[in-house]
View 1 (cartoon, rainbow, N blue to C red):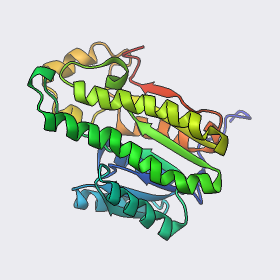
View 2: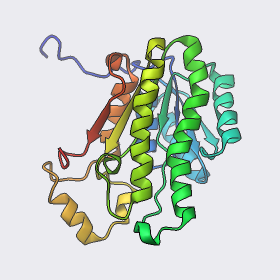
View 3: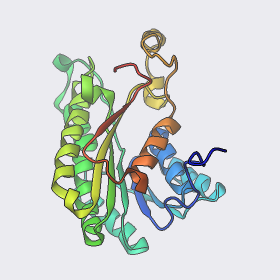
Length: 259
């Protein structure tokens, strides 16, 4: 092996760090939780309804020999629930070093047909949830003058998407939120970045009609949908010391489809 080309990740890369990953019972959130744990981080796996799946993530982390992990039920759109969740993590492990705002839902329909509830639920979970988690987790990060916040946005928040005006608005708002908070807290050695996945093979994309999947695949230069692990690798990099001079950025991970 050539000098300087050693393995990128060391098993202890995030040893001693504490991570909170929202919406981590499945899909991208699950992959992120597993990756951070594999690098030595203690991980709080947040979920809202899928307790069995969240517990299976904890079991998977234990089986891979990663860091310690716990599952925490909380609706990220609920102020008191988020406050209690953050307190539970800090009471147990003393701090939160890495926050991944991943929790998100869709309620797809054309704007003319969209009900107020469909709009409010998506904005509350996807955008308000990130605001609340960031607000309460920042207290620990500011005290220790160190932290990483990674917001999972979407290519829909960059370009828009028909039938997803609520989802795109929430994810576009998350990008603006990322850039603003990065400017507010950069002096405290806390970085804030956004990741904007394209079409990733998850339960969300599985619901797409086959003809829609084929049309999307045709515009992806890499000729495949991404995997949750592709996103997790990027998040792990942004959470590491290697990304200490990167903040306020939006990184698209879409196989080149929208470049």
